[in-house]
Length: 439
Figure 1 (spheres, helix red, strand yellow):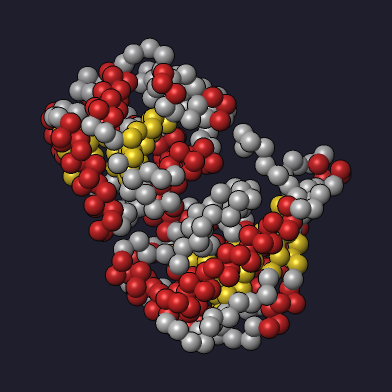
Figure 2 (spheres, rainbow, N blue to C red):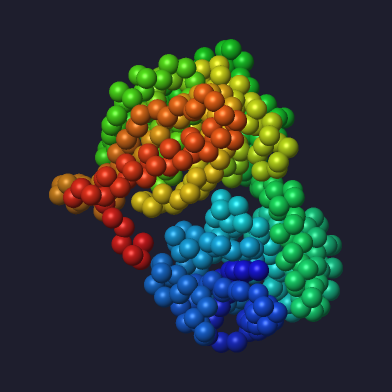
């Protein structure tokens, strides 16, 4: 089993927590497990962490509890998490919080441990750290504690997770195996909303399984609103990101419903898809975490975003409703890579969801590729970021014969070749924007 340990608390001087993390890692390796320690500190023995300037982005902030505050780099986290069976978080701070988000996007099981000993716990429990801890640890089914007194204190404080006390290596191993089983069987634990988020974010529980439901009037108003916003968004994207659309003529070949796909490399690329496909009715498949952003959550919901379920029964119902929506003539947009990787020009393997819907509805796939291009001399004075060009490819239709699985495989293979082929052609020109190694 390959386990990645993530912590923000790693200093030169020895501490109780560092000793516990080292003991945990050494015992796991002694039992034959492969471990990787990922932290913000650049000097660690045995070279087990992704360290150096790739791991530390901005600054270091030392406080009483030994926390190193540095801006986590998504590409470093993604590289560290690849091929892992479990991601275990040892602290609820900046690296842990962003790492938990990326682990969910990569669909890797997660667990956490409460690394505060009994002498530290009373000092922080009544302060701002209580709120910080509550929000972070509510995302995990299981929490590992290193003494029974901490477990009892967490239980008294109202923690709903299963609290396990690490008494031996065997208990650690069973804890990790049960954590993996929890995520595989039940999906990830629903994201806990703070009181502030509950006031300024949409309530997804009101969907009650009707993900694409809108009344006739609401559907008309939503379409008018999104098309008006698309004009404004085109101006904003063109000014700030140098955005433009190519290959729009390929959309003339699509008269009914369809499924559109695109590589996910920018937080604003959903608005670019709307600009490219207007005035068609467009639905976005989005992670539930995006709806927890204050005010922004309402905006993406108004634009037609729907939350992707995380449990198997809900996902089956979601897929059936998506097929019905496509058959009625709407377009559903997927990011088949499953996660956002800013300005990453390497297209990751696709998931099957989008292509299963297209195969079941016998609808075409519209492959789109977001390409970063070099900016001109005048624009370089304003920003170092590249221009973004959305290139629309020719629609890919499923085979008439064969099973749904065979049509799904055919669509997924052809769509992946279309997106990677477009990116490869652009790399051969002198206008392509390449990333530096340390980005």
